[in-house]
Amino acid sequence: MAGHSKWKNIQRRKTAMDAKRGKLFTRLAREIIIAAREGGGNPDANPRLRMAIERAKAHNMPKENILRAIRRGTGEEQGERLEEVYYEGYAPHGVALMIYCVTDNRNRTVSEIRHLLSKHGGSLGESGSVAWQFERMAYFSIPAQGHDPEAILDLAIEAGADDVEFDEDFIEIYGPVQAFKTISDALEQAGIKPDEAGLKMVPKQKLTLPPEQAAQVLRLIEVLQDLDDVQEVYSNLDITEEAVAQFEAA
Image (cartoon, helix red, strand yellow):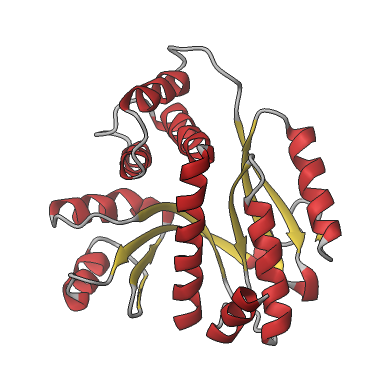
């Protein structure tokens, strides 16, 4: 888990840079819009929306921006017509990718993704070509510092989680999609605030590569995440400490 934890920290630094550029607010607003559209504008009855709002607040998104995004999601205010879409493909060395996007123009988005994949030695796949290698799951990430691992393990399992993973920086909870609300509510009642929560595509099996090859994949993931329409990139790469070190040294 050490490499995975270091990669998460790199991604956090990238998020901080995105916030400085104002780019992060666009992604946060899109999360809120989609959550409000799918489950309504009341965060008390819509855990996905509640988590999206909390994440936006954690990144100091102005209250009016949050409210406007909710209104757009519920249809009370006009805005761009957004849709969620997953693109499937391969990074170099056979690593499977699931690329989650929120876009107002599918043609633009797929064109940009295809270009980057090709440029970095990957390829775009047909629908269903790699999705079978992933499982959609409820996911929560909690800072390890200041929390009792055994207490969180007991709480998570009782709330319906399938697995809890620990390392020196993070505690990660995985569960079935239908357990998202119960786990979210249990954490809230215990006064525990996740720094990340949502539904993720989790690989059923991970692929281990030599550090240099793994670093190539991490570079591709990073450039894909820089696209405005890309919300998240999931892969079946086993992110080792050596791979992250190689990535940072490049």
